[in-house]
Image (cartoon, rainbow, N blue to C red; front, side, top):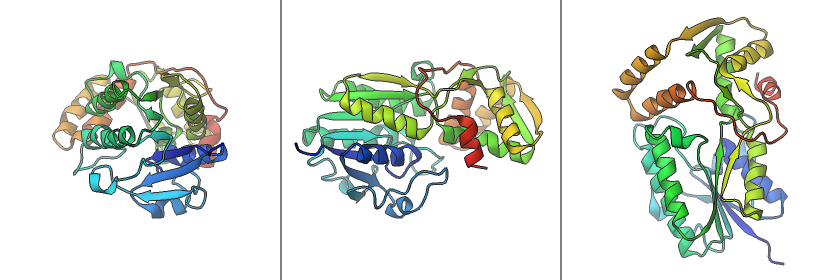
Length: 290
């Protein structure tokens, strides 16, 4: 039986590395698309695995530069993409990468007759469509639905790596909490989400919501971070109206920074609890990243 081939777009990122590893462990021929191949030769900043010598092919390409993407989907059966703007960028917007970048890959996948496209979006996206980053995710999700290709859209509540901000704040001795900090979420480890993605490649579900095994309020995440670091940070409750003011200021600086503030405000007002999946626990992740 011919070995299935998978393309992992965003292969150097927190999630992409684990997905590449999981597909390889399941017997796939794995091709990764990265902007900087040197990054995957070392462990990631949150303990992500080295995958340079694990995967079968490393393609250097930039989703904002179409000429660097030619042929990336040739002979590929499954495309997985967690490609997206993760940090403020004064050159590109969320639509440049999360929408247009992924759309370029989708167009190439259609041309190459790829069997299935798996995409990572955001849990509760329909409740946050005023945020441009979320708009970009969902606009691409719409393109994927109407493409005629088999697809799965996975919507995680949040990554363990996102929670490290609480650990860093605890070390600094201060713990700002937006609003009451009583909204609940169950973030998921990338290794567990990678298993969800690989299962999706072999299944027929089109939409999957995914969270981790443990549910916390944001205040409880702060308390967990304090417990793990052995600190007693000063709790700073920030009323939502102050957060709204900071958002207004951030919009004058950079749209990506404004997106970060907008997302933080949105999740401080919403419960974000998805089906509980996986075996990794946030307390253990905090201890590993002290």
